Image 1: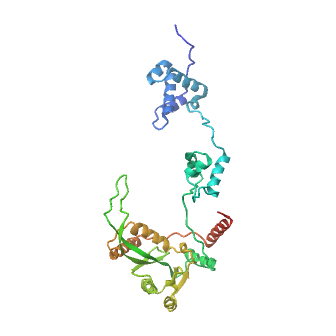
Image 2: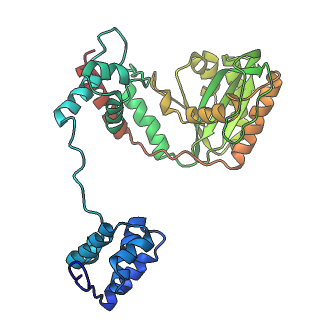
Image 3: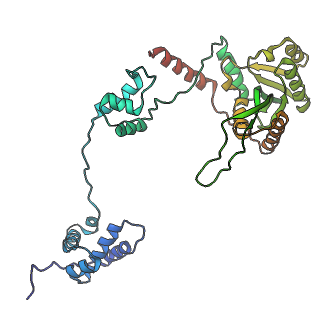
Amino acid sequence: MPRGRPMEPLVLADAEEAQLLSLAGSRSMPHGLVQRAQIVLACARGEANTSIARRMRLSNATVGKWRKRYLMQGIEGLHDELRSGRPRTHDDERVAEVINAALQTRPPDGATHWSVRAMAAHTGVSKSTVQRWFSLFAVQPHRQRHLKLSNDPFFVEKVRDIIGLYLNPPDHAVVLCVDEKTQVQALNRTQPMLPMGLGYVEGVTHDYVRHGTTTLFAALDIATGHVITQCKKRHRHQEFLTFLRHIDANVPEALDVHLIVDNCATHKHPRVRAWLARRPRYHIHHTPTYASWLNQVERWFGIITQMAIRRGSFSNVSDLVNKIELFVKHYNASAAPFMWTATAESILAKLQRLCAYISGTRH
């Protein structure tokens, strides 16, 4: 004699069966959803709940639950219902209080900036929550960026002049960004380096032996990205004049030469001025004071420092110079110009916003 209430028959349309078969055989869908589709298909074949539960190692209640859910809601019922989750511990006002404290105040213990633990102790919020809020709003009290505003009275005019050369270079002319990287040290590590391997980085000793220095003179062609370089023992107007002669020998005589340089005394020496005055095709353009970022060759100095100098070990100055020249040779073989997109107006507008912010900030 049968026991319990009779089960409502589960009949599938062809489209439903095809969809359930696709789910039941999927290897990319969640396991729970695949298992529920298999339960429904077994029920549609007339298999008893107890038999399905025993075969799939589930409880009778679980099989009955998904059978009933499918009868009531169809295939949508096999998906997990949305859950509200745990209610928030801190409201928006509390979040704003912590973030504003990090941005506008200093720790009471005399420290220069807030740490996650200090802010947690100050506000009573857990340090993991403070860390999550700092990451969410990109608040980084432990970091700084260095800046120096130009005090050049002709800042606007010089910016427009140099940016004009970058964005609209003159015809029949070459624009060269010229500067020197001084005091490049030939450092020799006291012990051999340990090679990089799987799971660990290259090892290098913290101490070294100094074998002298060199000065790297460089002129970057903004149109091609090629670099003209020379290494000299000293950084004086005599060496700069020698480098200018080197540039003169490497630039076709039919082209005018526009030199973008900073305000170093070497570049303004009377003998340098006289040399340029005797050559009408040369035009000098000085960057504003404290605005070396306008000179594109500074970006190239960053590249050679990172790729060839900083992590190198050199037995003497000649070794350093040879490796610099080797790097320059390979760099010029595949050189490409830097893509300068900033206009003079955008730079001046950004500096105006920065000045307004600094003027309104009080620490």
